[in-house]
Every structure is written in C-alpha cells, then in structure tokens.
Length: 450
Image (tube, rainbow, N blue to C red):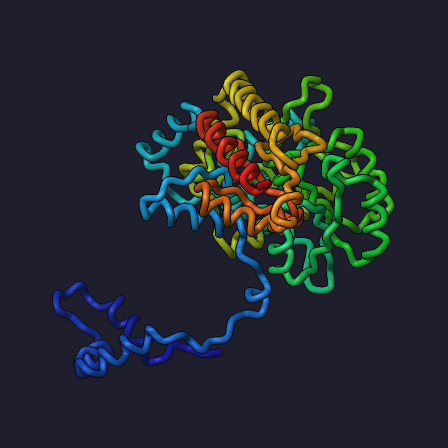
C-alpha cells in the first residue's frame, strides 16, 4: 500500500499551515522557479493527443444519434440558422406551478444539503404513496425505493446490479438507443428481440419464448412501456401473456421502464397503463420499476427519477449509486414531492389531452404523405415511428441528413432505434411548430418522388 509521496506532503503542509499571505510550500516554490521556456514547453505538450489507453468497453459504445443530431441542431442555431426540431423527447409545457414554487422555497430555505443516498424520506414516502394509489404496488419507502439523478441513471444501475460479463440482456426493438449501450457498459451482451410493425411493435409471447429458448444466459428483460420510440403500449392482457412466459424462466429479472406511463391515450380507462410489477406476485419479486418526473411533469432539467424494487435489488442499486453520484439534488427532490402531492390530476389530464391532439394531428398529416406507412397508431408517450423506407432506398440516415440540410427539419433516423427505414417524430412541441414541421416533411418527400 502506498503512503503519501513528497507531492502529497507538500499539499498537506499547505493545508495545515496558518493562513499567512504569501506562504508557498517548498515544492511549489521550486516549481515556480522553473524557467519560462520550460513552462511554455509543458503547456505545449498538453495540446498533444494523450497516449493513455482507454477502456475497450468505451470504444465499443456508440454515441446516441439523438444526442448527435440535437448537437448538430444546436450548432446550426448558434450559427444563426433557424431549425425546426422534432428530435428530442422533451415536453414544451412548463413544470406545474406547484413544482416551481417548491423548488423556489427549497432554495430560499437553504434546503441545499446532501440527502440520504436513496433520497429524502419525504420523497420516498410520496413515491410509495403514488405507486400504491395509482399502480396497486406496495413498496417500503425506507428499503425499496431509490431516488436517482434521472430515470436514465436508475435504468443503468438496474442493469449493472443484475448483469455482468457472460450474461445477456433481452432488448426488444425498436429500442431507446441507450439500452444496448448501457448493457455493453456492464460487460453483458445485448440480445435484440425483433418486433413487427403489424403488431404495433409490441412483444408477443411467442417471440419472447423463442428468444429465451435461444439465449439460456439471459439474465434480464428490458420492457419499455409505453415505448420510446414507437409510442406502443402493452395492454394488461398482453403483459399477463408475457408474464406467463417468464414464469417458465424464474432466473430472468425484468427492468420495467415506465417513464411515459402517464401519457396514454386510450378512451377506455380499463385499457390504461398497468405496471408490470403489479401483474402477479412472481413478477413483483423480479421486477425493477423505473419512473421519473421528466415526461409527465416536464422536469427534464431537474434530473430526478427513481427505481422501486424488492429490498435485495434496491439495496444493490443503492450500493452502486453510493459510489457514483450519491444523492440526487435536494432542490429537485423538494420539487418532486410537490409534483406527487400538490399537482391536481386535472392539470396532468389537461396536458395529456393536448398531447393527444398533437398526436392525432401528426398521424393525420402522415397518412396523407406519399409512401409513408403507419400501420398501428401509437397510443402512448409522444412519439410516432412512421415507415419511410420507400424513400431514399430505405436509407433513413441519409434521408434525415438531407432533410436537415435542405428543409432545416431535424428528425432522428430509425436505424438508431433498431428500426431501419423509419424516422422518429417527437410531437412534444407546439402545434405551430408541428404544422411547420409536417409541411416541411411533406414538401421534402414530394420532391423526392420526382
């Protein structure tokens, strides 16, 4: 075991010395006396590319196309180019006033200290109350709920807590691009489970059973419901069918990403969102439910999410988080409590109604466009994934790049979601912006036909 080297001793001396103006530790005096040319040479050397080897896992991870295109859009805007962007899944409405007020109060009251790694007791209790009231799920707020810096962190920690090298993780396609990359970061192998457009891109029990039979090292199934990027919603009946298959494979855990669960557009309340953990006692015991505040409450920049799971799984994710980021921001947590306890259901329902109107408008426009197919309309989230493979020879990346260059319209190519020949459209923006975007897309596709 190495002890303090001279450099560390000098720093320790500086730290322990009285606060005397002009005091410089001997080692730093020596450095300060170095010649100017030598200093210049040292500065110059820092501009050269480092020869330090990187972790091979990092080189295998791909940059998210959504982030890449969004960065390109921001660069164009910085250059004064006006761009219509439907590439990022971020609500255009502000957070509820109760949320903003709670965040303001937390700042004024200096509620800015570290909290417990798993979050404040108030927030964990509010989450437990919400899950019990709306989802018929009962979790101990002290041991079975972990608050993180956004749902994305919670997803990764759930994967890392259950999987590693020699394991595989089933990722249904189309998928959120981060899922397979997160799996790779753990050393596990992502297994892509293909779904069909005519099935609404939903998992069928037959496809799941076949995938599990072919991959006996499968350790985890990632279930995004409602889906990003398709907007598809698995009904309670379909979830029960999938659970029946999983009952045959008791060693497979489930990570249920339910961040969009409040954004469902079915007319029949009986067809609303059902949490996978609520399907049966056996599914409850193996499911990690991930949710957050970004989508329903428009708190994207506050970076607040949570994972709810049986104590053993929650404890494992807590261990990971304690060594990575510690707690989520205390101000965001105060805002989260207000979101769950002080925001009226009517306010959230009003937002859902507006989102549904936007979805209906986009679907109507897409169905009138040349050689654009949308076999099953989405019933949740705020995305549409139309098939545009009749254009550009099915090269969705080239289509999106030309669309951005020629029409200043940003969409994300479906190939980055495991759905080549499609594009993902986020309708979480103003109706005016949507109308402009649909006009641009229609003009572009009409021009491609000639």
